[in-house]
Image (cartoon, rainbow, N blue to C red):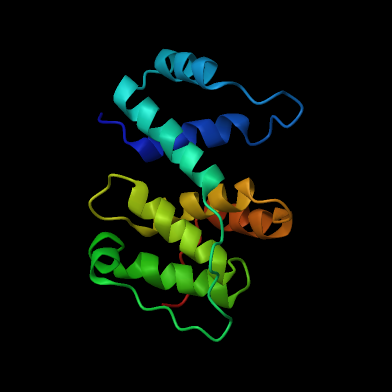
Length: 155
């Protein structure tokens, strides 16, 4: 099986999301643990770089509430129609704010995947929400959606 950066990120996320009592492991310890878990050095390094970029990605010039999001050609190529629709749905139901949507899109495009589907999108949304202070409620809602595996949302 070929592991992807997202596989490494999901492993880390599931391993550390509930371990708030323990100090955050350093990069060297993470690399060693991921290597023992069977991940390859290239994917490990790229996943850790992805996380570093997530932590340094700010809202920047956040779109206004009245802004209309148009996906450019690269985004349309990489994010399938269901993923784009899902992101807009998450905004409409109040889980994602405009600035968070942009961070999610940035982080999705930073994955090496040729085409990004809804399942990958869900996990990246959860990681982004988890990384941001004050988003516990939105994270909990998203966690319910991810683990419920509910695909009954409207396109």
